Image (cartoon, rainbow, N blue to C red):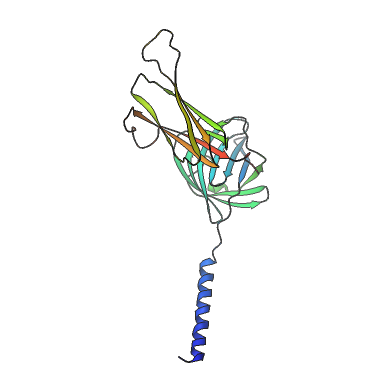
Length: 253
């Protein structure tokens, strides 16, 4: 091969490398998640209906829906991951334990977030046919009630969190406790407190008090299974799950 042919081969090789790189890097990168607390109000059957979307680093997501100035009628907790121009959500209904997978497309403009349901399961009344819905950034999470429903709560890093469930130690059946992600929650206490029984009646139960420390940002989950003492749990799915959205500081923008 002469020098001119070698030069042409080298040029073709460089062009091939450049074209290859351009082809495989031309796709738009995933959009960064719009962290914070976002709320959308809309008229529904003559009243104000509210959606609230809370996104916290590194990957915790909460979606709530309900009538304004009333209890939330639906609450989902789980994780998000950036996907194209939106988010993929893996959530659990905090009341029923039902799993939900949803995709949200969004367009961020300062304190204004346009959100469209882009696929997956329906979240309350959020419907793809409704088109983009305008969410506004909230200055902080509403913490008038720590618990959203009975099994989801906001928490701060370093906070001690308590779960209290009924248990009867006069029977062989116990709650088996499993921390789904120990990097978020650390067990620090587990005690049984019998109910008062001045008459010495048989079969009187009590309360199981479980205490955990919120260790790091994200979604912590505690699963409870029913099992006879010393035996395997009854079924693979937990009977009750508790969720804690843990943040290093006040949630919000």
